[in-house]
Amino acid sequence: MSANARMWTDRVLRLVIAAILLQTLFFKFTGAPESKFIFETVGGEPLLRYGTGIAELIASVLLLFGPSIVAGALLALLLMLGAISGHLFTPLGIVVQGDGGLLFGMAVAVAFCAALLLWMRQAELVRLLGRRG
Image 1 (cartoon, rainbow, N blue to C red):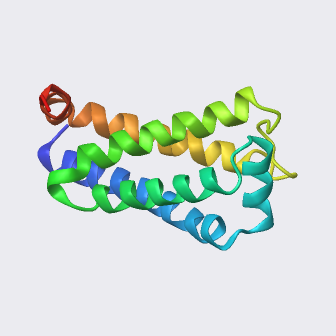
Image 2: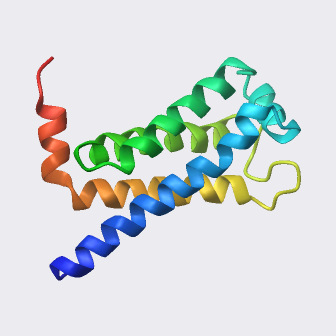
Image 3: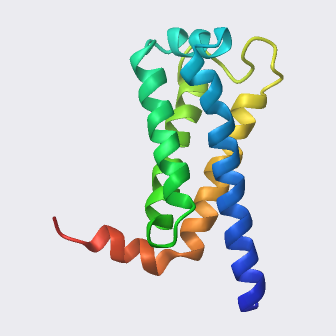
């Protein structure tokens, strides 16, 4: 992959992840009925709803700034693995209130984009995970 294609792929992945995460914040923070239903079903209403929203906001901000991109992608991936698990291993299921699996699909899309971004930036990921606190 050329350097230019790699740069644009990186940017598009970051924007897709951030756009999906940011558009869900309205529902989480306003207590939309769909959002409340999801977090009641998985047993985390309201703390998990607010906590997830805050974490998704942090991941989105981190993805948009150079030095923190890998941390944002890692946080987004972990959050989406939690969301996917919630769909698969709780009564929530893949289709939520007749959405045709849209929320599940968005979680899978974000997880895929974040994993691809981490793969593209694996040297940075190794440095980040290799730091000793």
